[in-house]
Length: 472
Figure 1 (tube, rainbow, N blue to C red):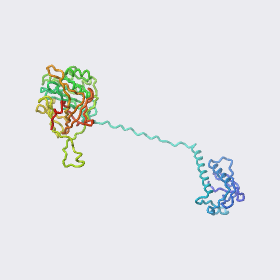
Figure 2: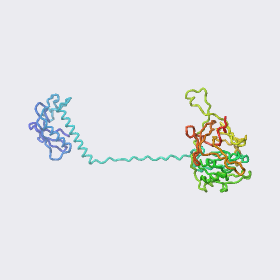
Figure 3: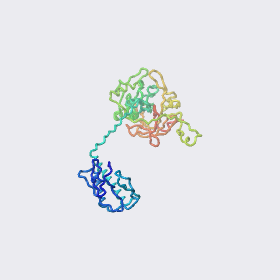
Figure 4: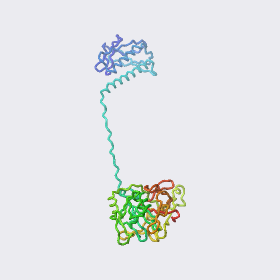
Protein backbone atom coordinates (compact mmCIF):
# COMPACT_ATOMS: atom_id res chain seq x y z
CA UNK A 1 0.00 0.00 0.00
CA UNK A 2 1.12 3.58 -0.66
CA UNK A 3 0.56 4.96 2.85
CA UNK A 4 0.45 3.60 6.33
CA UNK A 5 -2.96 2.28 7.31
CA UNK A 6 -4.73 4.93 9.22
CA UNK A 7 -6.08 3.46 12.38
CA UNK A 8 -9.23 4.12 14.42
CA UNK A 9 -9.36 6.43 17.37
CA UNK A 10 -7.69 4.92 20.41
CA UNK A 11 -10.94 5.23 22.43
CA UNK A 12 -13.05 3.41 19.93
CA UNK A 13 -11.03 0.16 20.05
CA UNK A 14 -12.50 -0.95 16.76
CA UNK A 15 -10.94 0.67 13.70
CA UNK A 16 -12.98 1.04 10.57
CA UNK A 17 -11.08 1.17 7.31
CA UNK A 18 -12.18 2.29 3.90
CA UNK A 19 -10.13 2.05 0.73
CA UNK A 20 -8.77 5.18 -0.85
CA UNK A 21 -8.27 5.59 -4.59
CA UNK A 22 -5.00 3.71 -4.38
CA UNK A 23 -6.63 0.64 -2.83
CA UNK A 24 -5.04 1.45 0.57
CA UNK A 25 -7.25 1.55 3.64
CA UNK A 26 -8.00 4.95 5.26
CA UNK A 27 -9.17 5.54 8.82
CA UNK A 28 -12.90 6.35 8.82
CA UNK A 29 -12.75 7.72 12.38
CA UNK A 30 -10.19 10.39 11.65
CA UNK A 31 -7.72 9.44 14.40
CA UNK A 32 -4.56 7.39 14.20
CA UNK A 33 -3.25 4.82 16.67
CA UNK A 34 -1.07 1.78 16.81
CA UNK A 35 -2.62 -1.03 14.78
CA UNK A 36 -2.46 -3.40 17.68
CA UNK A 37 -0.91 -3.49 21.14
CA UNK A 38 0.76 -6.76 21.94
CA UNK A 39 0.29 -7.03 25.72
CA UNK A 40 -1.00 -9.39 28.33
CA UNK A 41 -4.54 -8.10 27.78
CA UNK A 42 -6.81 -10.08 25.50
CA UNK A 43 -7.27 -8.74 22.03
CA UNK A 44 -10.85 -8.12 21.05
CA UNK A 45 -12.11 -9.40 17.75
CA UNK A 46 -11.73 -6.72 15.17
CA UNK A 47 -14.09 -6.26 12.31
CA UNK A 48 -13.10 -4.55 9.11
CA UNK A 49 -15.59 -2.49 7.20
CA UNK A 50 -15.67 -3.66 3.58
CA UNK A 51 -16.64 -0.95 1.13
CA UNK A 52 -19.64 -1.49 -1.07
CA UNK A 53 -17.58 -1.18 -4.21
CA UNK A 54 -16.19 -4.48 -5.41
CA UNK A 55 -12.49 -4.55 -4.50
CA UNK A 56 -9.79 -6.38 -6.38
CA UNK A 57 -9.59 -10.10 -5.82
CA UNK A 58 -6.46 -9.85 -3.68
CA UNK A 59 -7.97 -7.14 -1.40
CA UNK A 60 -11.14 -9.16 -0.95
CA UNK A 61 -9.25 -12.26 0.08
CA UNK A 62 -7.06 -10.23 2.46
CA UNK A 63 -10.04 -8.63 4.21
CA UNK A 64 -11.82 -11.94 4.57
CA UNK A 65 -8.79 -13.71 5.99
CA UNK A 66 -8.06 -10.89 8.48
CA UNK A 67 -11.62 -10.86 9.76
CA UNK A 68 -11.66 -14.63 10.11
CA UNK A 69 -8.49 -14.59 12.12
CA UNK A 70 -9.70 -11.81 14.45
CA UNK A 71 -12.97 -13.62 15.14
CA UNK A 72 -11.38 -16.91 16.11
CA UNK A 73 -8.39 -15.69 18.10
CA UNK A 74 -8.97 -14.32 21.63
CA UNK A 75 -5.62 -15.03 23.24
CA UNK A 76 -2.65 -12.76 23.66
CA UNK A 77 0.95 -12.84 22.67
CA UNK A 78 2.61 -13.31 26.02
CA UNK A 79 6.18 -13.74 24.80
CA UNK A 80 7.74 -10.37 25.68
CA UNK A 81 10.60 -11.09 23.35
CA UNK A 82 8.16 -10.58 20.49
CA UNK A 83 7.47 -6.90 21.40
CA UNK A 84 9.75 -3.97 20.89
CA UNK A 85 9.25 -0.29 21.20
CA UNK A 86 8.69 1.28 17.81
CA UNK A 87 9.59 4.68 16.51
CA UNK A 88 7.52 7.67 17.49
CA UNK A 89 4.62 8.29 15.13
CA UNK A 90 4.91 11.44 13.07
CA UNK A 91 1.73 12.76 14.81
CA UNK A 92 3.55 13.07 18.09
CA UNK A 93 1.48 10.41 19.85
CA UNK A 94 2.82 7.56 21.88
CA UNK A 95 5.43 5.33 20.27
CA UNK A 96 4.12 2.48 18.15
CA UNK A 97 4.88 -1.06 18.95
CA UNK A 98 6.00 -3.37 16.18
CA UNK A 99 5.55 -7.07 15.76
CA UNK A 100 8.85 -8.81 16.32
CA UNK A 101 9.26 -12.37 15.11
CA UNK A 102 10.95 -14.69 17.56
CA UNK A 103 12.69 -17.89 16.55
CA UNK A 104 11.49 -20.43 16.77
CA UNK A 105 8.10 -18.67 16.24
CA UNK A 106 5.31 -19.11 18.74
CA UNK A 107 2.17 -20.94 17.79
CA UNK A 108 0.34 -17.69 17.10
CA UNK A 109 3.20 -16.28 15.06
CA UNK A 110 3.28 -19.40 12.95
CA UNK A 111 -0.46 -19.10 12.35
CA UNK A 112 -0.10 -15.51 11.26
CA UNK A 113 2.74 -16.38 8.87
CA UNK A 114 0.71 -19.22 7.36
CA UNK A 115 -2.26 -16.91 6.90
CA UNK A 116 -0.19 -14.27 5.17
CA UNK A 117 1.38 -16.83 2.84
CA UNK A 118 -2.07 -18.19 1.98
CA UNK A 119 -3.39 -14.72 1.32
CA UNK A 120 -0.49 -13.81 -0.91
CA UNK A 121 -0.73 -17.11 -2.83
CA UNK A 122 -4.48 -16.86 -3.44
CA UNK A 123 -4.22 -13.22 -4.31
CA UNK A 124 -1.38 -13.82 -6.74
CA UNK A 125 -3.29 -16.60 -8.42
CA UNK A 126 -6.38 -14.44 -8.73
CA UNK A 127 -4.35 -11.57 -10.16
CA UNK A 128 -2.71 -13.88 -12.66
CA UNK A 129 -6.12 -15.23 -13.70
CA UNK A 130 -7.43 -11.75 -14.33
CA UNK A 131 -4.40 -10.51 -16.21
CA UNK A 132 -3.84 -13.67 -18.21
CA UNK A 133 -7.32 -13.48 -19.77
CA UNK A 134 -6.45 -10.23 -21.45
CA UNK A 135 -2.82 -11.04 -22.15
CA UNK A 136 -1.91 -11.20 -25.76
CA UNK A 137 -0.11 -14.34 -26.90
CA UNK A 138 3.59 -13.97 -27.32
CA UNK A 139 4.74 -13.58 -30.83
CA UNK A 140 6.17 -16.80 -32.18
CA UNK A 141 8.85 -17.20 -34.76
CA UNK A 142 9.02 -20.02 -37.23
CA UNK A 143 12.45 -21.58 -37.45
CA UNK A 144 13.87 -21.23 -40.88
CA UNK A 145 14.52 -24.48 -42.61
CA UNK A 146 18.08 -25.09 -43.50
CA UNK A 147 18.72 -25.02 -47.18
CA UNK A 148 19.15 -28.49 -48.62
CA UNK A 149 22.64 -28.71 -49.98
CA UNK A 150 22.88 -30.95 -52.99
CA UNK A 151 26.24 -32.72 -53.07
CA UNK A 152 28.24 -32.01 -56.17
CA UNK A 153 28.09 -34.55 -58.92
CA UNK A 154 31.38 -36.50 -58.88
CA UNK A 155 33.62 -35.81 -61.83
CA UNK A 156 35.24 -39.24 -61.71
CA UNK A 157 34.14 -42.68 -60.50
CA UNK A 158 35.58 -46.21 -60.54
CA UNK A 159 34.82 -48.03 -63.76
CA UNK A 160 32.56 -51.02 -63.19
CA UNK A 161 34.54 -53.18 -65.58
CA UNK A 162 38.11 -52.36 -64.55
CA UNK A 163 37.97 -50.28 -61.37
CA UNK A 164 40.03 -47.56 -63.05
CA UNK A 165 39.06 -43.92 -62.52
CA UNK A 166 36.77 -42.75 -65.31
CA UNK A 167 34.14 -40.18 -66.17
CA UNK A 168 30.73 -41.26 -64.78
CA UNK A 169 29.38 -41.42 -68.33
CA UNK A 170 31.67 -44.39 -69.06
CA UNK A 171 29.60 -46.65 -66.80
CA UNK A 172 26.53 -45.75 -68.84
CA UNK A 173 27.97 -47.33 -71.96
CA UNK A 174 27.07 -50.87 -72.96
CA UNK A 175 29.67 -53.55 -72.31
CA UNK A 176 30.72 -54.93 -75.68
CA UNK A 177 32.34 -58.34 -76.02
CA UNK A 178 34.32 -59.40 -79.10
CA UNK A 179 35.56 -62.88 -80.06
CA UNK A 180 39.23 -62.65 -81.15
CA UNK A 181 41.21 -65.40 -82.85
CA UNK A 182 44.59 -66.77 -81.65
CA UNK A 183 45.81 -69.05 -84.41
CA UNK A 184 49.38 -68.30 -85.58
CA UNK A 185 47.90 -66.68 -88.72
CA UNK A 186 45.96 -64.23 -86.57
CA UNK A 187 48.97 -62.89 -84.71
CA UNK A 188 49.63 -60.20 -83.71
CA UNK A 189 46.05 -59.34 -82.77
CA UNK A 190 44.60 -55.86 -82.32
CA UNK A 191 42.56 -54.43 -79.48
CA UNK A 192 43.49 -56.98 -76.81
CA UNK A 193 45.70 -54.63 -74.82
CA UNK A 194 42.81 -52.16 -74.40
CA UNK A 195 40.21 -54.65 -73.20
CA UNK A 196 39.01 -54.39 -69.60
CA UNK A 197 38.63 -58.16 -69.13
CA UNK A 198 39.91 -60.99 -71.35
CA UNK A 199 38.89 -64.67 -71.19
CA UNK A 200 41.17 -67.29 -72.73
CA UNK A 201 40.21 -70.92 -73.46
CA UNK A 202 40.64 -73.63 -76.09
CA UNK A 203 38.10 -73.43 -78.93
CA UNK A 204 38.78 -76.72 -80.66
CA UNK A 205 41.74 -78.74 -81.94
CA UNK A 206 43.96 -77.19 -79.25
CA UNK A 207 43.62 -73.70 -80.80
CA UNK A 208 42.87 -71.06 -78.16
CA UNK A 209 40.59 -68.09 -78.57
CA UNK A 210 40.04 -64.86 -76.68
CA UNK A 211 36.89 -63.10 -75.60
CA UNK A 212 37.59 -59.40 -74.92
CA UNK A 213 35.25 -57.05 -73.06
CA UNK A 214 35.26 -53.29 -73.66
CA UNK A 215 33.61 -50.42 -71.81
CA UNK A 216 36.27 -48.05 -70.48
CA UNK A 217 38.14 -47.81 -73.78
CA UNK A 218 37.04 -47.44 -77.39
CA UNK A 219 39.73 -48.87 -79.65
CA UNK A 220 39.26 -48.26 -83.36
CA UNK A 221 40.99 -51.43 -84.52
CA UNK A 222 39.91 -54.84 -83.17
CA UNK A 223 40.47 -58.24 -84.73
CA UNK A 224 40.60 -60.72 -86.22
CA UNK A 225 36.99 -61.41 -85.15
CA UNK A 226 35.98 -65.09 -85.07
CA UNK A 227 33.07 -67.38 -84.22
CA UNK A 228 31.05 -67.94 -81.05
CA UNK A 229 31.31 -70.72 -78.46
CA UNK A 230 28.71 -71.36 -75.72
CA UNK A 231 31.01 -70.91 -72.70
CA UNK A 232 32.18 -67.53 -74.03
CA UNK A 233 28.54 -66.54 -74.43
CA UNK A 234 27.89 -67.51 -70.82
CA UNK A 235 30.83 -65.42 -69.62
CA UNK A 236 29.46 -62.57 -71.71
CA UNK A 237 26.12 -62.79 -69.90
CA UNK A 238 27.94 -62.25 -66.58
CA UNK A 239 28.46 -58.65 -67.73
CA UNK A 240 25.15 -58.17 -69.57
CA UNK A 241 27.23 -57.54 -72.67
CA UNK A 242 26.57 -57.39 -76.37
CA UNK A 243 28.25 -60.25 -78.23
CA UNK A 244 30.25 -59.53 -81.40
CA UNK A 245 31.24 -62.60 -83.45
CA UNK A 246 31.32 -64.12 -86.96
CA UNK A 247 29.00 -67.12 -86.90
CA UNK A 248 29.66 -69.85 -84.37
CA UNK A 249 29.41 -73.48 -83.37
CA UNK A 250 25.91 -75.00 -83.46
CA UNK A 251 25.56 -75.03 -79.68
CA UNK A 252 27.03 -71.54 -79.48
CA UNK A 253 24.48 -70.10 -81.92
CA UNK A 254 21.66 -71.99 -80.24
CA UNK A 255 22.66 -70.58 -76.88
CA UNK A 256 22.67 -67.02 -78.24
CA UNK A 257 19.05 -67.41 -79.29
CA UNK A 258 17.75 -69.30 -76.28
CA UNK A 259 19.55 -67.22 -73.63
CA UNK A 260 18.44 -63.85 -75.00
CA UNK A 261 21.90 -62.55 -75.83
CA UNK A 262 22.34 -59.09 -77.34
CA UNK A 263 23.57 -60.49 -80.63
CA UNK A 264 25.92 -58.53 -82.91
CA UNK A 265 26.65 -61.39 -85.37
CA UNK A 266 28.58 -60.23 -88.42
CA UNK A 267 26.46 -62.49 -90.62
CA UNK A 268 23.41 -60.32 -89.94
CA UNK A 269 25.19 -56.98 -89.34
CA UNK A 270 27.98 -56.79 -91.88
CA UNK A 271 27.97 -52.99 -91.87
CA UNK A 272 29.61 -52.93 -88.43
CA UNK A 273 32.59 -55.00 -89.69
CA UNK A 274 35.13 -54.80 -92.48
CA UNK A 275 37.79 -57.03 -93.98
CA UNK A 276 41.41 -55.92 -94.27
CA UNK A 277 43.50 -56.70 -97.34
CA UNK A 278 46.74 -57.53 -95.53
CA UNK A 279 45.36 -60.90 -94.33
CA UNK A 280 43.33 -63.59 -96.00
CA UNK A 281 40.01 -65.03 -94.84
CA UNK A 282 38.96 -66.07 -92.31
CA UNK A 283 41.63 -64.13 -90.40
CA UNK A 284 40.78 -60.69 -91.77
CA UNK A 285 37.49 -59.54 -90.20
CA UNK A 286 37.95 -56.41 -88.08
CA UNK A 287 35.76 -53.90 -86.33
CA UNK A 288 35.91 -50.97 -83.87
CA UNK A 289 34.03 -50.02 -80.75
CA UNK A 290 32.61 -46.97 -82.54
CA UNK A 291 31.08 -49.23 -85.21
CA UNK A 292 29.75 -51.67 -82.66
CA UNK A 293 28.34 -48.89 -80.46
CA UNK A 294 26.46 -47.53 -83.47
CA UNK A 295 25.03 -50.99 -84.10
CA UNK A 296 24.03 -51.30 -80.45
CA UNK A 297 22.29 -47.92 -80.57
CA UNK A 298 20.39 -48.94 -83.71
CA UNK A 299 19.21 -52.08 -81.90
CA UNK A 300 18.17 -50.09 -78.82
CA UNK A 301 20.91 -51.62 -76.66
CA UNK A 302 21.72 -49.32 -73.77
CA UNK A 303 23.56 -49.45 -70.46
CA UNK A 304 24.70 -52.85 -69.21
CA UNK A 305 23.42 -53.88 -65.78
CA UNK A 306 25.93 -56.10 -64.02
CA UNK A 307 28.09 -56.45 -60.96
CA UNK A 308 31.78 -55.97 -61.66
CA UNK A 309 34.67 -57.56 -59.83
CA UNK A 310 35.62 -56.15 -56.43
CA UNK A 311 38.65 -53.89 -56.87
CA UNK A 312 41.44 -52.37 -54.82
CA UNK A 313 44.52 -50.21 -55.15
CA UNK A 314 47.90 -51.76 -55.89
CA UNK A 315 49.67 -53.28 -52.90
CA UNK A 316 53.07 -54.50 -54.01
CA UNK A 317 54.61 -57.39 -52.22
CA UNK A 318 57.11 -56.49 -49.50
CA UNK A 319 59.48 -59.17 -48.29
CA UNK A 320 59.26 -59.73 -44.53
CA UNK A 321 62.01 -58.51 -42.22
CA UNK A 322 63.43 -61.46 -40.22
CA UNK A 323 64.47 -59.09 -37.44
CA UNK A 324 61.00 -57.60 -36.96
CA UNK A 325 59.28 -58.24 -33.63
CA UNK A 326 55.95 -57.46 -31.99
CA UNK A 327 53.43 -55.51 -34.05
CA UNK A 328 55.91 -55.03 -36.87
CA UNK A 329 56.30 -58.78 -37.22
CA UNK A 330 52.53 -59.32 -37.26
CA UNK A 331 52.02 -56.62 -39.90
CA UNK A 332 54.40 -58.18 -42.40
CA UNK A 333 53.27 -59.40 -45.81
CA UNK A 334 52.25 -63.05 -45.62
CA UNK A 335 51.46 -63.52 -49.31
CA UNK A 336 53.51 -65.88 -51.41
CA UNK A 337 55.77 -64.01 -53.84
CA UNK A 338 55.72 -65.07 -57.50
CA UNK A 339 57.72 -63.61 -60.37
CA UNK A 340 56.63 -65.83 -63.28
CA UNK A 341 53.97 -68.40 -64.15
CA UNK A 342 53.00 -70.77 -66.94
CA UNK A 343 49.65 -72.33 -67.87
CA UNK A 344 49.38 -75.59 -69.78
CA UNK A 345 46.52 -75.48 -72.29
CA UNK A 346 47.29 -77.48 -75.41
CA UNK A 347 50.94 -77.17 -76.37
CA UNK A 348 53.86 -74.95 -77.16
CA UNK A 349 52.10 -72.58 -79.56
CA UNK A 350 49.24 -71.81 -77.18
CA UNK A 351 50.55 -72.23 -73.67
CA UNK A 352 50.96 -68.72 -72.20
CA UNK A 353 53.82 -67.48 -70.03
CA UNK A 354 53.69 -64.41 -67.77
CA UNK A 355 56.63 -62.52 -66.32
CA UNK A 356 56.10 -60.11 -63.45
CA UNK A 357 57.29 -56.52 -63.96
CA UNK A 358 57.68 -54.86 -60.53
CA UNK A 359 58.15 -51.40 -62.06
CA UNK A 360 54.69 -51.35 -63.67
CA UNK A 361 53.16 -53.99 -61.38
CA UNK A 362 51.96 -55.89 -64.47
CA UNK A 363 52.53 -59.29 -66.08
CA UNK A 364 54.15 -59.31 -69.51
CA UNK A 365 52.62 -62.05 -71.62
CA UNK A 366 54.41 -64.40 -74.04
CA UNK A 367 53.41 -67.43 -76.15
CA UNK A 368 55.36 -69.75 -78.43
CA UNK A 369 58.53 -68.43 -76.82
CA UNK A 370 57.89 -64.85 -77.99
CA UNK A 371 56.40 -61.74 -76.38
CA UNK A 372 52.70 -61.58 -77.15
CA UNK A 373 52.44 -58.36 -79.12
CA UNK A 374 49.57 -56.02 -79.89
CA UNK A 375 49.36 -54.51 -83.40
CA UNK A 376 48.01 -50.98 -83.61
CA UNK A 377 46.45 -49.56 -86.75
CA UNK A 378 49.44 -47.27 -87.29
CA UNK A 379 51.72 -50.32 -87.44
CA UNK A 380 53.30 -49.94 -83.98
CA UNK A 381 53.34 -52.84 -81.54
CA UNK A 382 53.31 -53.17 -77.75
CA UNK A 383 53.52 -56.21 -75.50
CA UNK A 384 50.33 -57.28 -73.77
CA UNK A 385 50.70 -56.84 -69.99
CA UNK A 386 47.60 -57.32 -67.82
CA UNK A 387 47.40 -56.03 -64.28
CA UNK A 388 45.85 -59.21 -62.88
CA UNK A 389 46.14 -62.80 -64.16
CA UNK A 390 43.75 -65.51 -62.98
CA UNK A 391 44.10 -69.22 -63.61
CA UNK A 392 40.45 -70.35 -63.27
CA UNK A 393 40.02 -74.09 -62.88
CA UNK A 394 37.08 -75.15 -65.09
CA UNK A 395 35.95 -78.64 -66.08
CA UNK A 396 36.39 -79.42 -69.79
CA UNK A 397 34.84 -82.12 -71.93
CA UNK A 398 34.68 -82.82 -75.65
CA UNK A 399 31.66 -81.49 -77.49
CA UNK A 400 30.33 -81.97 -81.02
CA UNK A 401 32.72 -82.23 -83.98
CA UNK A 402 33.39 -79.33 -86.30
CA UNK A 403 33.58 -79.56 -90.10
CA UNK A 404 37.20 -80.70 -89.92
CA UNK A 405 36.40 -83.43 -87.40
CA UNK A 406 37.81 -81.61 -84.38
CA UNK A 407 35.75 -81.68 -81.20
CA UNK A 408 34.43 -78.40 -79.88
CA UNK A 409 35.44 -77.65 -76.33
CA UNK A 410 32.74 -77.88 -73.72
CA UNK A 411 33.77 -75.87 -70.61
CA UNK A 412 31.49 -75.84 -67.57
CA UNK A 413 31.31 -72.07 -67.19
CA UNK A 414 28.36 -72.32 -64.79
CA UNK A 415 29.04 -73.63 -61.31
CA UNK A 416 31.84 -73.20 -58.78
CA UNK A 417 35.53 -73.92 -58.60
CA UNK A 418 38.95 -72.82 -57.43
CA UNK A 419 41.29 -70.30 -58.94
CA UNK A 420 44.78 -68.82 -58.59
CA UNK A 421 45.11 -65.05 -58.59
CA UNK A 422 48.41 -63.43 -59.54
CA UNK A 423 48.73 -59.75 -58.65
CA UNK A 424 51.21 -57.46 -56.89
CA UNK A 425 53.93 -60.07 -57.48
CA UNK A 426 52.09 -62.67 -55.37
CA UNK A 427 49.75 -65.64 -55.73
CA UNK A 428 46.58 -66.34 -53.75
CA UNK A 429 44.27 -69.33 -53.88
CA UNK A 430 40.62 -68.25 -54.15
CA UNK A 431 37.25 -69.51 -55.41
CA UNK A 432 34.98 -68.62 -58.32
CA UNK A 433 31.21 -68.88 -58.62
CA UNK A 434 28.61 -68.43 -61.35
CA UNK A 435 25.29 -69.87 -60.15
CA UNK A 436 23.49 -69.78 -63.48
CA UNK A 437 23.92 -68.76 -67.09
CA UNK A 438 22.98 -65.10 -66.61
CA UNK A 439 24.40 -64.50 -63.15
CA UNK A 440 27.63 -62.64 -62.50
CA UNK A 441 30.99 -64.36 -62.21
CA UNK A 442 32.49 -63.63 -58.80
CA UNK A 443 35.66 -64.38 -56.87
CA UNK A 444 35.80 -64.94 -53.11
CA UNK A 445 38.36 -65.80 -50.45
CA UNK A 446 38.22 -68.74 -48.05
CA UNK A 447 35.80 -66.87 -45.76
CA UNK A 448 33.36 -66.19 -48.58
CA UNK A 449 34.12 -62.49 -48.81
CA UNK A 450 34.66 -60.90 -52.24
CA UNK A 451 38.30 -61.12 -53.23
CA UNK A 452 39.55 -57.75 -54.40
CA UNK A 453 41.52 -57.45 -57.61
CA UNK A 454 43.83 -54.64 -58.64
CA UNK A 455 42.23 -52.01 -60.85
CA UNK A 456 43.14 -52.47 -64.49
CA UNK A 457 43.01 -55.23 -67.07
CA UNK A 458 42.12 -58.68 -65.73
CA UNK A 459 43.19 -61.70 -67.79
CA UNK A 460 41.33 -64.96 -67.04
CA UNK A 461 42.74 -68.20 -68.44
CA UNK A 462 40.62 -71.37 -68.14
CA UNK A 463 42.74 -74.31 -66.97
CA UNK A 464 41.52 -77.82 -66.23
CA UNK A 465 43.31 -78.33 -62.90
CA UNK A 466 45.70 -76.84 -60.38
CA UNK A 467 48.46 -78.95 -61.89
CA UNK A 468 48.11 -76.98 -65.15
CA UNK A 469 49.56 -73.90 -63.43
CA UNK A 470 53.22 -73.60 -62.43
CA UNK A 471 54.84 -70.54 -60.88
CA UNK A 472 57.95 -69.47 -59.05
